[in-house]
Length: 499
Image: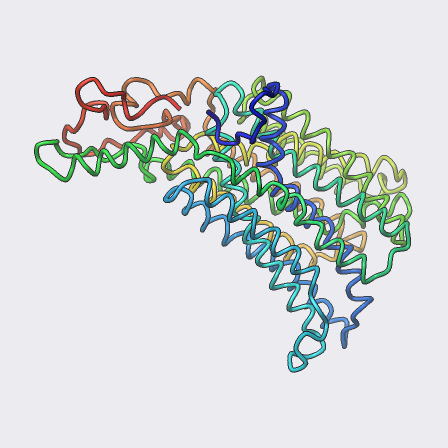
């Protein structure tokens, strides 16, 4: 039984391909909304501030920053809160909650009114949108640890990496949808009021559709087994006749370096990735721009270059390995940004070549750390810590995104010198990501994570993969015998089984 089981007619048996597609659409709807919102918010702000003028350019900049950062702040809080909550009460209920928050936040943002309360002033619509973006971001944040955990625990070991990469590739679909919506609305001459309202509200459509299927899903078997183990340990410690419970070896302290590695790699990557979303329009001006239609076309070109990166990651993740893929992605990003920075003037003279080299940074982002920073923390952590550790890692990523979006505008990338410096800083940040990967990311295969007999006897749901460069090993813990192998008494079924 899988957690993401779609409700089916009794006489229709879906093909394996249909089942995987259903899982990906349901689990990945939050990523579609996240990527869509990230790319569409630029168009929304451009139209919104034409529709509702501010008193000064400085005031407009403050409100733009407020709207942009509200979703990021909500995401950071949601990743930590919902990740921790999912390890306490289960995956299903929290997953339904996060999807609901995305839909409600997006739809309410589209329904904001400029004169809802007269005493709130003439700029109240910006505050309303920022507040509802915060709610949507809160839900999107929860999607990261929940989708990764549910997908990881629902797939077989041989399918897990590819399925998780497929779920994350919904982010690419979100970018594509945003670029197409942008281009269609601008080219069709839609009114400003309709444009910004439709763009904001459309982010909640896919998560709203997925809610029905989320309500039908089962709690993951892995979480139920972990809950049973925890209950058995609690029960055994209550009475002397049952022995003293063993404290699980898969404690958070044993994974301290792993969490540092997954969090730091994700943070460094998102500094670069989100900063580039701010100034890619300055690069694509080499192809011509200056109008809404041309800018929308240029955004679509970048998206079409980046999309194959997701497919390359899906197809090669098991063959290359997670760590190798992440190292390769960071290395190529560092090299390509370095070329863009050092040979900026020469590349600028050949517009299509400049855009191609720059676009390849997005390709190797997706065929590299953008995918693996999501997959690795969804695999290496045990069931009782998986959502929490993934949420912490993802929150550090969003914190890096906030750093990138806040700091890079001060480089003034709209000028040649500022854009050149931004490229060089991105290259250096990618090098730091490579270093973090080398020293703080474990090298493992699917089989390395399967618990052996010793793991099961010690209550470990995922085999510990050490960071060999640090000589990292599980910390021996003071224990006294409890129920051996956490088995049920007298011929009952083991409470802890291989996930």
